[in-house]
Image (cartoon, rainbow over all chains, first blue to last red; front, side):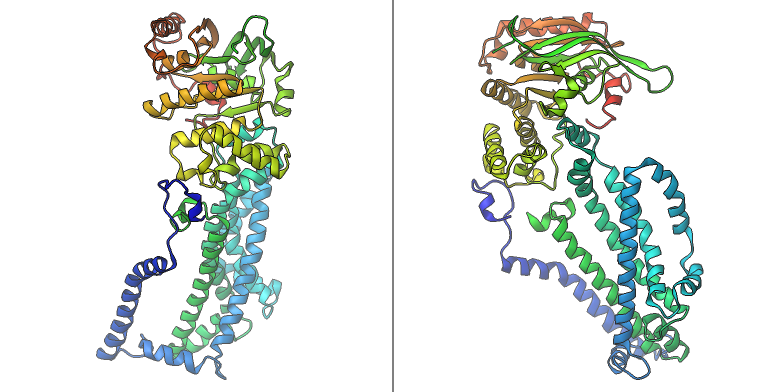
Length: 283
Length: 285
């Protein structure tokens, strides 16, 4: 929306200029940055002062050094591990989301589907992920990244399915009456009311799913497969008492999660700029 | 402009009955309803809660079907009229879609009927001018006040130039000042477009001020107890509200409501969910 949309000086906030936006971003992020730096410094100081041993907690400087040394190392290749794990998580995210959305549409459309599919979906959600991991490795191939993707997909599926179903079905009854008064078909109602209504629900689920997909992939890695993945690096470096490398791997895993989360946030701004949660940024 | 005797009827309701089968036995929401509404009339339906006035409105709009009897609109069965997109509807909530701009909300019925883009553009503009919101076309609904949102809903309802405009307590959620302004606004639009309006309300002054005819209903079962003609001159304005005839008519409607046996007041009773609310699936209000 541009300033031209408010010709009469109506009480609608104008889009801020670039300088204002930067100032606002700084104001909003400054507290978090200060806290972050303070925690890192305190961590370093306390670990050194109390001479805490490295296998309990290495100082941040050691972790950063390990990250640098093993970025492309012969024993541990952190960069390749992070890439592979991110690939597995992303694959699982896509599979779980596609299946979750498809089942949600079927459930929203046919009541019999709801009765038939929901118990199985709930059962699938109740399976402890760690218990099923070895089985998925056997089914889809322990060295095949697909086995990790399917584990991630299993975790992603449920929140996506439940939230999208809710978004498709929780439409104001008067909105449906309005559409019917215009002789709109079920398809038109789906396209013009239910789907836009479900988008915020979908994106909320997707944010949850980003973290879940990494958990699924890494748990799968614990039970075997390629050794250049975050999960294997964590297991092997810990048993070799190289906790600086373990911590570096954990930080890379978290970084991958943050990247996925930020990607969904960007998608949100693209798809639902009108939604209440984003209005401050559009108006 | 008002529905004189002999003018072609837009709505013909004959021996209509509506039962709801909800929860053991079922309730009779409406019984023995006969009503003709002439072209260009402004008819208000008023009555205590549970009298079935919203149900009657939904029957006219073919959002529900009668259990017995017939409803004709523009010489066709109500169902055919709905498929022919001859209705505009305004609810108590504006029911604007937050993902569409004001202008795009008004265009919705035009898209559904398959009107071409330039025509849609032109018509939406004209409708927004009609409700005096032309400069808000590109805004989003949340940027507008409640009264403005309801005006957008009216613009949308009129976009297809419907044979009949159905309004279900459209100003019930607005404050008294806004409500009076909206009343004058809707009268102006009615005079300007010549459309037929059926208006459900809880407010006696609102019914008398707006209507050419007030249909007084009573509850259990919902039926029509009285038709009150409103011979007040047009255009109506603040002076109308001080006219002795206006006061006489307000009293007449109030007494008709009291005598109807359906409650002591026209305001919403405290007698639990009414069939009309159940019919609306609890969706509005």
